[in-house]
Image 1 (spheres, rainbow, N blue to C red):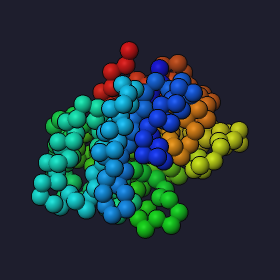
Image 2: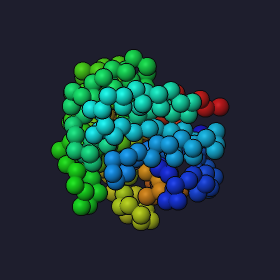
Image 3: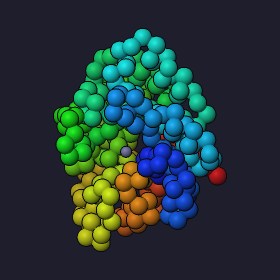
Image 4: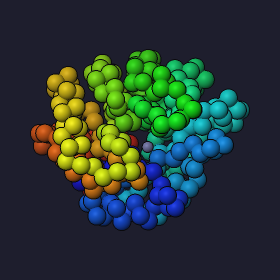
Length: 261
Ligand SMILES: [Zn+2]
């Protein structure tokens, strides 16, 4: 069983190619994450339509930060979170230039904590030329939220890359925080044997610090990567069988409440 906990819609706005890619890579389920598009609108409606096509797809909707100050918006968002196939809420932080510690977000965190909705923060680099701010996507930003909301389950997308050790420190300290392994490599390029070596070396440093990969979730950031190649890279990590099971699907199944058979 393999769950890819971090994918997005295909370039054509659908998920047909994703489903084919999953077949090819032998991935059982994927979580499709909604994004904030230019003009501060979310593509959540499209994501929900796409995931309804298949029992193998699940959705994470996103918070458009500029709208959290609007009356009614939180209600709108919490309605979306009630959807059958919606398993979490994503915050893009640096991209939309806000800190996870902005108090305007607390009511959403409280809602998610109360209703056991896991949240995902973008952490790590921003695309070249982005107008966002890196300081808000540094893993250390997550420590304060995680401490203040100990019953809120948090996933740091991209392991805070390149700040992997900082991410590991946040994971080690906070029981309620996990990290997904997505988007480690150069986007829209094939993952080479050399890339896999570098990945293994850098992940070994994380292991020395955390002793295991028990708090990591397999994720790719498809369609920026080939799921099959990405899976190959993660499979190359040195993992015990119980650890492998947790990384490949058990953590995602538990964190996002996805039933696996
Ligand atoms: Zn992503």
